Length: 328
Image (cartoon, rainbow, N blue to C red; front, top):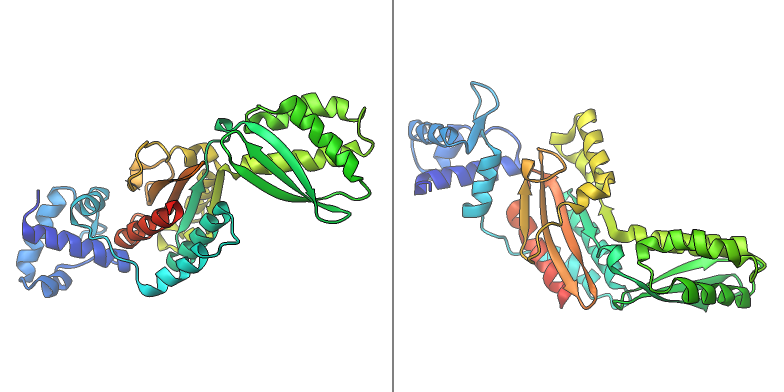
């Protein structure tokens, strides 16, 4: 463990560097902790030997190392309570009774992304864990319908579709085929079942079979693909760490690989987890802070992705607030 003075110095350097990514010198620190610059330099040298600080140039000040951020998060961080302005923005989303839970989560993550210039992610329940129980349709007018998908876990999704010159009777025949032949199928296998079991025979029962089949196929494909939702992807471009074109291309490619994103969801407990640099599978200059949520039959993971010099105290407070309101 560090001495009290070393802890103060490390905490000050981390928080200063988070706010302004310029190496922090001994003079700046000495003014804050009422010590001479020489004393501060000695302590900074010790912190560097311990691997908690590092130099970017021989004559520069110090910046936190990955280990320094980790020590800060584990021992020095004081979680910030949300300010009134941030809380009001999120409360407006959570109090909107007309929004489905998935929309509430996405919209609140958009608010956080705009607040902090970080990328946010929601990982839904694994689609193979949900079995198709039933499909229903509700006509809205002559051309528009709402398709409702219900899983065995009580998860309900709906999507509007447009079908021109198709009778409701034809649509109901298709729904009957789906419910009779592929009910009980894992959601992520429904697309294959539609292609190999429904598509070859639907023409025997339904006249406008091609248009109807394509509409239902897209409905199920969209449902399966909802497992990962990334909000504010381009916020990465506003961080100085990602001004290099090749680096940002690499990060964007990783964000497009759902397997990489899903790998951050590896812990079974519901605590907030912080993965700094090499601790995550995205990039050495990135931090991922995440927590799980469970509301009835809906469960998933919400995560905030930003640079290693992320505002840890504020992000953890925001995630705690989000989790509490989702599960309320």
